[in-house]
Length: 107
Length: 119
Image 1 (cartoon, chains in turn orange, brown):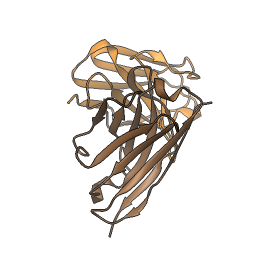
Image 2 (image 1 turned 30 degrees about the horizontal axis):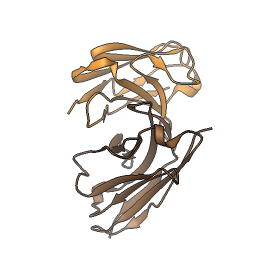
Image 3 (image 1 turned 90 degrees about the horizontal axis):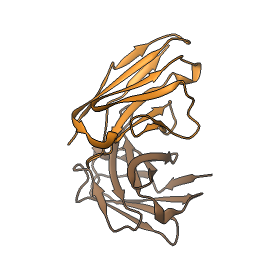
Image 4 (image 1 turned 45 degrees about the vertical axis):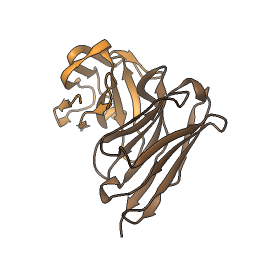
């Protein structure tokens, strides 16, 4: 099983600042089969990024994904009020598909 | 517009059973894998099970293998999760999620249905 470790656990930032979220895998994720999701309280998760760097439909370009192998990053270039949420990474290279434990981005 | 609507959750005693359903619309159901993901109260996301577009291939998390069964009725655009031998640790919101094209990321989600296991 591929274990994903996200850091930091909580990121305290202000609107307009840059957010950098990390996701590290316990073994290489081939073909960059890594996704990122955003979840707000009381809501279902929303897909942001798939294939490590491809934005899902409707996702603004201030959000970007990068990385390969075991190290992946989600960057939000300029935080907007609606970006304060919990973010999860997920690998879909090998079953069982696994999620990281999440990073909370708070004001 | 893609829509996924789950139903079937509720309060059940330990050892009991439930069948969750997810009716979908807005895309060609048979083309895409479908998935169940759960979230215990105040916790993170946990993948539960997946099924290929044809229904011929299924995957399960070790925590539910042998107790949960995923299936789909492509004539009814409906995904199911039969959950048996329920335990307290199965208490969670269960989300139905559409897979990517031959890939197991989750590009659309339902609103979730709450399963509570308690005596």
